Image (cartoon, rainbow, N blue to C red; front, side, top):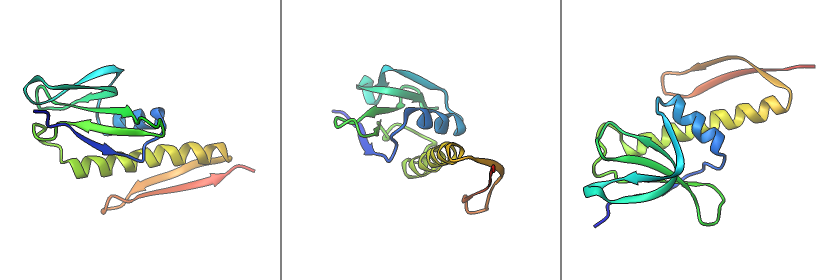
Length: 129
Protein backbone atom coordinates (compact mmCIF):
# COMPACT_ATOMS: atom_id res chain seq x y z
CA UNK A 1 0.00 0.00 0.00
CA UNK A 2 1.36 3.37 -0.98
CA UNK A 3 1.42 6.25 1.49
CA UNK A 4 2.29 8.95 -1.03
CA UNK A 5 0.46 12.23 -0.66
CA UNK A 6 0.10 14.63 -3.57
CA UNK A 7 -0.24 18.34 -2.79
CA UNK A 8 -1.16 20.92 -5.37
CA UNK A 9 1.11 23.98 -5.14
CA UNK A 10 1.15 27.50 -6.56
CA UNK A 11 4.56 26.77 -8.07
CA UNK A 12 4.77 27.28 -11.83
CA UNK A 13 8.40 28.13 -12.71
CA UNK A 14 11.05 25.42 -12.24
CA UNK A 15 13.86 27.95 -11.80
CA UNK A 16 12.08 29.70 -8.90
CA UNK A 17 11.24 26.33 -7.35
CA UNK A 18 14.88 25.25 -7.47
CA UNK A 19 16.08 28.55 -5.95
CA UNK A 20 13.47 28.28 -3.18
CA UNK A 21 14.58 24.74 -2.31
CA UNK A 22 18.23 25.79 -2.24
CA UNK A 23 17.29 28.72 0.03
CA UNK A 24 15.70 26.18 2.38
CA UNK A 25 18.97 24.22 2.48
CA UNK A 26 18.22 21.37 0.09
CA UNK A 27 20.21 19.93 -2.80
CA UNK A 28 17.96 19.51 -5.82
CA UNK A 29 18.18 16.47 -8.09
CA UNK A 30 16.71 16.75 -11.58
CA UNK A 31 14.81 14.03 -13.38
CA UNK A 32 12.81 12.31 -14.44
CA UNK A 33 13.72 10.82 -11.10
CA UNK A 34 12.37 8.30 -8.60
CA UNK A 35 10.95 9.47 -5.25
CA UNK A 36 11.20 6.87 -2.47
CA UNK A 37 8.71 6.08 0.26
CA UNK A 38 7.39 3.41 2.61
CA UNK A 39 8.69 -0.16 2.11
CA UNK A 40 10.43 0.73 -1.13
CA UNK A 41 7.36 2.21 -2.82
CA UNK A 42 8.30 4.76 -5.46
CA UNK A 43 6.76 7.36 -7.72
CA UNK A 44 8.17 9.53 -10.50
CA UNK A 45 8.97 13.24 -10.32
CA UNK A 46 10.79 15.98 -12.20
CA UNK A 47 12.74 17.28 -9.18
CA UNK A 48 13.62 15.61 -5.90
CA UNK A 49 15.16 16.54 -2.57
CA UNK A 50 16.43 14.07 0.00
CA UNK A 51 15.28 14.23 3.61
CA UNK A 52 17.06 13.19 6.80
CA UNK A 53 14.70 10.20 6.92
CA UNK A 54 16.56 7.43 5.10
CA UNK A 55 14.53 6.08 2.18
CA UNK A 56 12.07 8.98 2.08
CA UNK A 57 12.27 11.82 -0.45
CA UNK A 58 10.19 14.82 -1.44
CA UNK A 59 9.45 15.18 -5.13
CA UNK A 60 7.95 17.76 -7.45
CA UNK A 61 6.32 16.90 -10.75
CA UNK A 62 4.50 18.83 -13.45
CA UNK A 63 0.74 18.46 -13.24
CA UNK A 64 -1.10 16.62 -15.99
CA UNK A 65 -2.46 19.94 -17.23
CA UNK A 66 1.14 21.26 -17.22
CA UNK A 67 0.09 24.41 -15.34
CA UNK A 68 2.42 24.02 -12.39
CA UNK A 69 4.00 21.58 -9.98
CA UNK A 70 2.58 19.25 -7.39
CA UNK A 71 4.50 18.04 -4.39
CA UNK A 72 4.63 14.29 -3.80
CA UNK A 73 5.97 12.61 -0.66
CA UNK A 74 5.33 9.82 1.79
CA UNK A 75 4.91 12.05 4.85
CA UNK A 76 4.30 9.04 7.11
CA UNK A 77 8.02 8.33 7.14
CA UNK A 78 9.48 11.83 6.92
CA UNK A 79 10.70 13.00 10.32
CA UNK A 80 11.87 16.49 11.24
CA UNK A 81 9.89 18.23 8.49
CA UNK A 82 6.30 19.26 9.13
CA UNK A 83 4.31 19.14 5.89
CA UNK A 84 2.37 22.35 6.53
CA UNK A 85 5.48 24.32 7.54
CA UNK A 86 7.46 23.00 4.58
CA UNK A 87 4.78 24.03 2.07
CA UNK A 88 4.42 27.48 3.70
CA UNK A 89 8.19 28.10 3.63
CA UNK A 90 8.45 26.83 0.06
CA UNK A 91 5.67 29.13 -1.13
CA UNK A 92 7.25 32.10 0.66
CA UNK A 93 10.69 31.54 -0.90
CA UNK A 94 9.13 30.81 -4.31
CA UNK A 95 7.12 34.06 -4.16
CA UNK A 96 10.27 35.94 -3.17
CA UNK A 97 12.15 34.77 -6.27
CA UNK A 98 9.15 35.27 -8.59
CA UNK A 99 8.58 38.82 -7.30
CA UNK A 100 12.25 39.69 -7.44
CA UNK A 101 12.52 38.58 -11.08
CA UNK A 102 9.37 40.50 -12.07
CA UNK A 103 10.50 43.67 -10.31
CA UNK A 104 14.00 43.55 -11.81
CA UNK A 105 12.38 43.18 -15.24
CA UNK A 106 10.43 46.38 -14.48
CA UNK A 107 13.65 48.28 -13.69
CA UNK A 108 13.74 47.95 -9.89
CA UNK A 109 16.77 46.96 -7.88
CA UNK A 110 16.83 45.44 -4.41
CA UNK A 111 18.24 47.91 -1.90
CA UNK A 112 17.51 46.15 1.38
CA UNK A 113 15.78 43.07 2.67
CA UNK A 114 14.95 41.76 6.10
CA UNK A 115 12.78 39.29 7.89
CA UNK A 116 10.44 40.21 10.72
CA UNK A 117 9.96 38.03 13.79
CA UNK A 118 6.76 36.55 12.38
CA UNK A 119 8.64 35.42 9.25
CA UNK A 120 7.32 38.18 6.99
CA UNK A 121 9.87 39.35 4.44
CA UNK A 122 10.42 43.07 4.04
CA UNK A 123 11.97 44.26 0.76
CA UNK A 124 13.04 47.77 -0.13
CA UNK A 125 13.36 48.39 -3.84
CA UNK A 126 14.46 51.34 -5.90
CA UNK A 127 13.55 52.05 -9.47
CA UNK A 128 16.34 53.17 -11.75
CA UNK A 129 15.46 56.23 -13.81
